[in-house]
Image 1 (tube, rainbow, N blue to C red):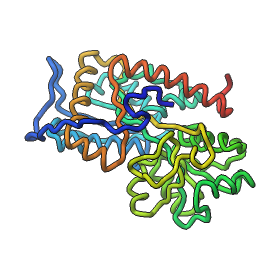
Image 2 (cartoon, helix red, strand yellow):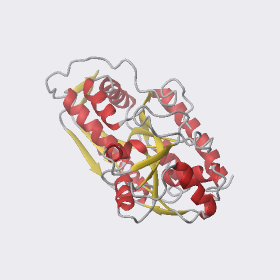
Image 3 (tube, one colour):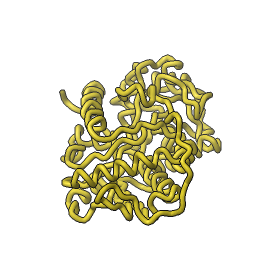
Length: 334
């Protein structure tokens, strides 16, 4: 799903992180006449999920690096992110310091017609990361590995109840369906429980409401490292250096089931280009700081930074790729 092979190789972490010294806390970041003295990070999903983690990681790094002191996170949940998007659009005039965290989700939800807005209705500042999906179970699960889980699902596709931090037809649901389809299992027979964000999906798995969740594994890295959750496989072409013992689905006999969730930052529609450029400059400066590298490494994030026209071009292609996947999985009509 990620067409740019220079940034992730689908997976490579940002190379050559600059050893910039973190200076004293500065009151503002400016570019030409544009002054950024505060940043409001808007998240359309619940606390603990991937978008929320991204926002809070950016908040932490901005403050620790000394780039911006006044940084806040607002969770405005509902409608698979549509409530936050609508709020950003409807209040555009007073959102000149707001960055909305979204990405692949807005593409899928608009293609599925879950809401009317698309990424074109807001202003793309840039992409930040591309998170690889993992298949996770409770440590007490009877499925010892991904081959055992696949075998159980081939016997009965409804034997395992799946969960995810997105609505039905959303990115997590698509990831689970892609796994089943590529394994030769009827994805339409899958039981899927939708949670409001990855944090609630993990709670559902730990509470035995579901037997398996499919989500960007970086969202659950703390729980994986703490042996609270067990990851059976990742949906990528190569193993991850963050979880080197976890096989890819291809290694387990399920080729072609690869998926990443791009996380990007958007501003309100009509934001002046100079202001968008100033925020893009701020973001580009941020990802070169030791403070960001600390956050990135801790969370196991894969850097996927693009801004300006390259970011726009990526999203146009990303939408085409996802449309094809949704048609193939039967979520939308051709």
